Amino acid sequence: TAFFYTDTYSGDALGSVNIALVTAVAMVPEGLEAIVTLTYSYAVKVMASQNAIVRALPAVETLGSVTVICSDKTGTLTQNIMSLTAFVTSNARYKNNVDATDRVPVNFVRDDTYLASRAQHDMKKTGKDIVADGPNNPAGRRGHNPSNHFTVDSLHATDNPDEAAANAALPPDDGFPVKNGESPSREWIQSALSCGVLCSKCVLGEGGGRAGEIGNPTELSILRASYFAGIDIEELKNDAPIVAEVPFSSDYKFMATVHEPAKVDNCPDGKYVCFVKGAPDR
Image (tube, helix red, strand yellow):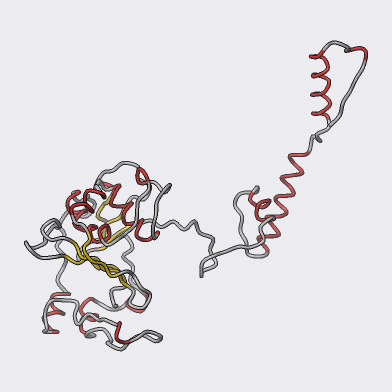
């Protein structure tokens, strides 16, 4: 801070302020902006040599003051945010617009080419070959209690392997519920995602946003996709209250909830309905 006094400007407050401002501006080097930019650029280059890529130059200053960095198992810095990008049925794939702001069913569009690449170990297998391999291995995985391991005996509702293989070779019904490139109705989306909505104890943020949300990021992504598809989350949960629950556990890797009868789509009269989500082979 500098203070200047002279008899020339005695009693002239405005003149004194002008002198102070001019002096303050003159103290800032003309090349300060270039110097700061060059410093940031050098820091980015050094960090790149250590396999750390920085997109925004000012972020270097923030990272320079960090003492502890927590990352996931892949070494990636994440925001702890997940989005449901698509869901797959027995005959189709539906791509979700994760950037949508309107609550309309057209956020989901059938796109059978989206995420359609097979796993590397199944690249050369046909559906018939996979079914012909038989049921899953009933042996428990290493490190897990075999009593908690559940398997699917067949991919089709038949005990005849030849019949199951023939069914797997049949082309999908392209007209159900909509054709490729079209959007399903809100009712169909609700029936498809109701399991993920009801088998959850999460609370979605106000207006479908992230502020105020409570719960697991994976479950919240399902709730958010349902919300922006036009589904009334609270009404759906109120119509099918939970009467029993099996909490998620890392031992058996699934969560299950039992709901009141007759208030859930496709639920027989007088029968409770159970929704389960988790690892399909457990």
